Length: 185
Image (cartoon, rainbow, N blue to C red):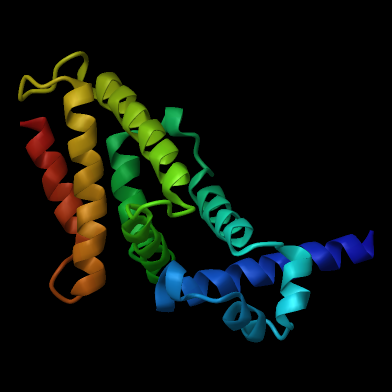
């Protein structure tokens, strides 16, 4: 049992190191050798835990999702989303990695493209349901929850990019709360 625990701990260390390397260099610029070096392994030792770079990428994305899954999406409400934005402001490395991977995933045959496609389909559906719960079938603007959900995602992601580029000028939590005021008018 102790060997398994050590193996799980080592995998977690590798995932954290991969997250850091991807945040610094992007997925394409991140090498298995750089990740292995960061955790004191040879590349062959890293391959024992993750047989491919794609397998490591999936582990990084799944690990990030576990952090955000503490509260099931069906229990989300707009104030909770605002709290999530505030929380993300304390996790610059995670946000940077996610944003870098998202930007790269739009390129042809990127290994993270299916993950992000599936994720955004789910998030839009979850946000539409959240908006429906909050406002009913029509928001005060007259738009449906399905029409507003992709706009809400765009605001969330767009604020993250702006904040990453200029954190001194962009307070993403405050800007998101301002956006919520627009939704309610």
